[in-house]
Amino acid sequence: MDGVTLAFPTNDLKKQVFEERKLPESAIMTPEFPVFTDDKLNDSIDRLYKAGFVKQVHRLLWDLKKGIICSPEDQAIAQTYIDENQAVQSSVRSIFTTHSRAIHSSFSHDTIVFDEDPLSLILDVDTLKIADLKKIKNNKSKAQLFGDDTPRFITLQRYLEGVEAGEILRLPDEFRVDISNDWLLIMQTEGISSNIIKFLDCTYFYKDESDRDRIHFINREKLPEDKKIIIMSATIPVNIYKELYGERVRVIDISDVEHEGTITQHTKYSYSRSSLEEHLEEANAKLSKRPTITFKSFNDKVENATQNMWFGNCSGYNDYTGTSINVLGCPHKHNALYLLIGKVLGVNVDKFNREFNMQTVE
Image (cartoon, rainbow, N blue to C red; front, side, top):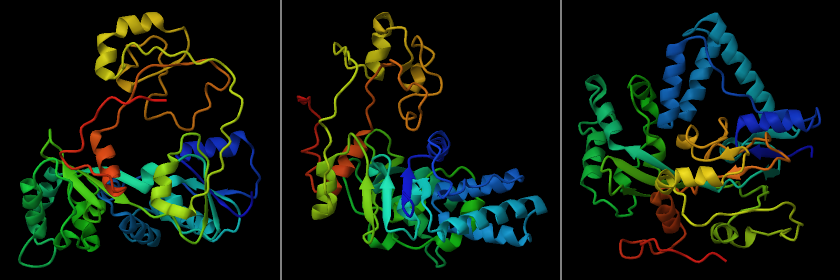
């Protein structure tokens, strides 16, 4: 196991695996990003992260390390994080990290092992709020964001407002500009929740048909070409990976494992959120008295619902190992995810070919 990068979905899972399985002391983990004693500093860093200014956050850490712009306590926190991060980057030991860091960071190992399917980060679907662009524009002291007489954020805002809803488009080159030097402006602007830098580099985007302030977009991230990538997953979409990586994909199928236990399904209703709301009393009556994983919004309505787990927050828990459980509900991603991924994969998803129909599952 020594000498590889092992990637897990979250830091919490990484810690859990490291502690519960008592992995070799020769392994090392990437450090958690620190929380500083200065709340304003934490808020500023949070704004930068949300807007996509990751490199600028790490540049800020080096300024904090010098102690010029912060307290001695926060200087020590920054110093510790930088030291731990450098130790990991230069280590030849096995490194435990997150999916995101495994994709976006540079490690010296020639093999990366993903504990679960990282496709959601490789084909990364996100949203931009046009209102966030207006917030930046309204900072009059920094209105000339791009350093010329035409504040192009205003132009971008007007362009997106004029785009027809539902059309899947590429962002024109005139808007694919580098705004990394304007991180101070973003840090001083409240209320931004969109990853603007990621949007400016997106592969495709389209405007939401029901919310004209929301832009959905997708970025196709790259896996390192000079490393062996091992993905361990029971549900990996092989066809998508073959479309993305061609002959590089080698499938090792161990689906002939012996299944233990019994799966009982109730298929009378779809049990989407609206369906579950309508048939909640009947669903509760059918549920065995076991821990039940469901939608977070139904945790207080469903009998024996797990309070620490719900759809979208299930990875990395071992709480119910060897225990019978209920799973109530059928979560559905926003249509934007399917349409944008389809576009990247070369599927015809124009307005006349995107109707969703019932499909037979074999």
